[in-house]
Image: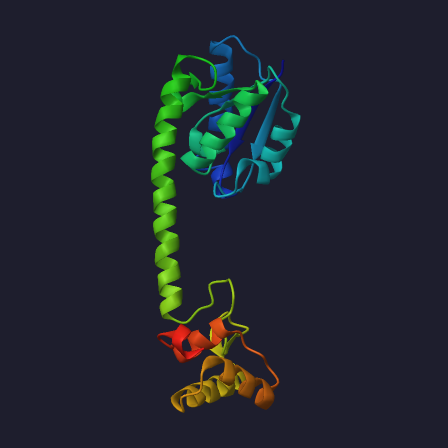
Length: 225
């Protein structure tokens, strides 16, 4: 069994000021001594944003790769190790599966294998679900705003448009000319199959009846075929 400490600060300045690494390491060592453990190695993350998942941080990745069943990890605070409750919930579940114990001092100690565990997981699950809801809301709001501004959101590009280098949908001149002819032929009373043939002859492009129906916004398509 090995015991590891993990500490992190977001900026180089915090390494000596603010949430000092020295303060965190003293807390980790003091806690380890209190519960009868000795820290074998400390993983110190300097100037790394908490927005990065643990496994994507230099020291965090090294810690995850070294862990074996029976090992213990001690960190001073949840937000030093995880970017969110959702992230914490995912990593904690994986640590439990691997037989690794995680002690978070601000949450009272071992959160993976004692009486605190169930309470912590329940709370984190509730907070994580709220985070998921907020993420879904932000994504929906962003997509609505981008759609209103004509931004391309992925998927099939609608006929008559192309994606600009800036990521916007912009008219495709050749396809817009095809659309104009299709609408004109429809106004003249041509059925969709006839329109498809005329467009292919004039522009060298065969459009499906479904695409033509959308283009001309035809109602009662079956009767016109």
